[in-house]
Length: 189
Length: 77
Image (cartoon, rainbow over all chains, first blue to last red; front, top):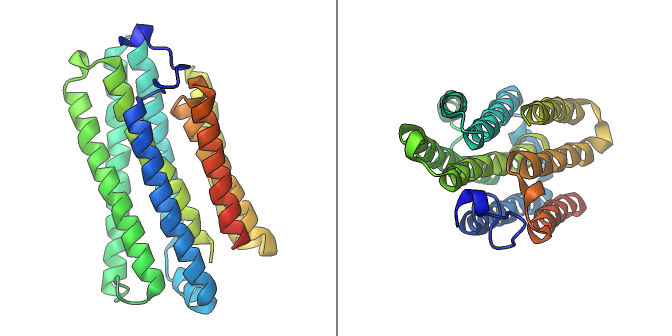
């Protein structure tokens, strides 16, 4: 079905495509279950989890949240421009989306290096097992998202609207996952 | 369209700041406020950045139900 005839009100054609939305729900449910498991274990060892949380850099985590939200904003504007046939402007905003995505990875790397230097690795305790697994899985999604955006940018003039929208939807999923991960890991305990 | 997206973006920034402040200064209400603000941000991104507001009511309800279920579960545990 061509984009101009796609009725997003049709249950089988949500914005971004039904396949991607099935993937999104599987991902957020999986991360959601893992985060709930983390809270469960946190309730078993509240002192350990609180003391471990204090070892995290909340400022860096908050900055990363702002970086990802900004990236999501640029992605949304890029898509709006693309749908309006403003391809050059769309490509420009898409570049900013990717720049902020890379910035997220840079800050995450700085955070990870601090943790490794101080011995707060995956096996350190239960809190940090969850921390590393959840944030690393999220980082993998961000990297995959950046690859998808890079391909979309490379072929932007030949890309169909529904494909561009699907790429944008995947990128926003990375944001959604972080919005679940950040408050639980960095602020909850 | 761009104006609306920009407004949502500013709102998301403010909610992020509010979350950070709540975690430090809200005492017993910190958890509730932090999760509530995150839930609102989740819905704002889904509905406005991902255009769920244009989707069939099934997808709208699915997103709202997931956000609510996650929020409630984390807070009652």
